[in-house]
Length: 44
Image (cartoon, rainbow, N blue to C red):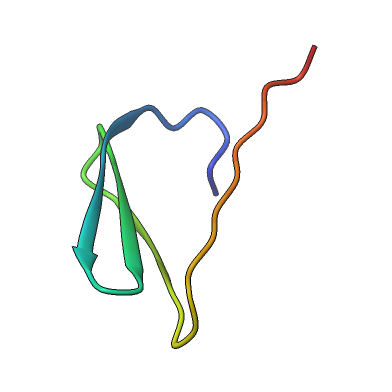
């Protein structure tokens, strides 16, 4: 579902939640009751 998507913005919607909004208007939500940790690494 994410192949070819272009990120428009990443925002903190509320405590414990992150929203990734894509250029086509779709959104990816990640949330947690405990501290939310996300990590993005680049392939080399």
